[in-house]
Length: 239
Image (cartoon, rainbow, N blue to C red; front, side, top):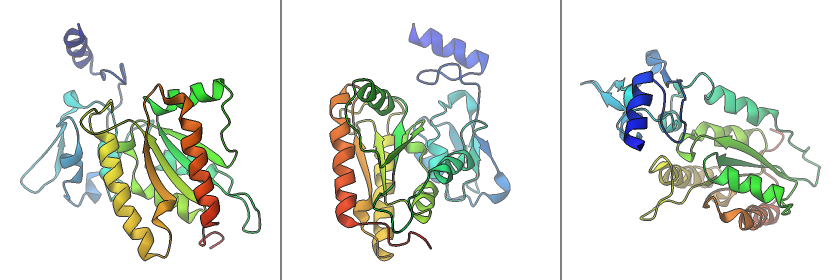
């Protein structure tokens, strides 16, 4: 039955599970492409080929709209009409950052919409206590998180950043196969960059949760808040 659904969706030009019926496609601003091949290498579904120069060649019939290509691009030239670098960047800028002399901190959490966000929603409906200093932004997949968003958040004065997504590894639960794993590797790299800037690498972390972990999520995010409180405010706040 799933195979038939996939064939019908492909024939209609829309995506299959988990973004069933999504008619959007990634748009590439090729004039700024540097042929780095990151998007073609990281796409979990082989939806991007490349020519002899390394320029990506989209194969839209294989695209699952996860946005991993968007997250991989250092030039930020990939996006969807309803999901792109500028859109999430605007969400980050819209978050109020407490003044430097304010005791409150501000922490951004990028949450995968497939498992982590429903679990977070359930935690809220069960009235599980979640720290008021946290702000949540849903994303299609952790693989779609571009490191520019992390830099934007820290530059804006955010005191910490967490990525909350699906379990990866041998018993992976990522709806897009390896999005969480890719995001974790990117975060390791940005941790090294933070260390060279004099910032604690622990200010940016990745956590894995299942859709049934609604009882664990409050503890995970609240523990991260406590760690950030111990570190203190972002030293670049106000610059």
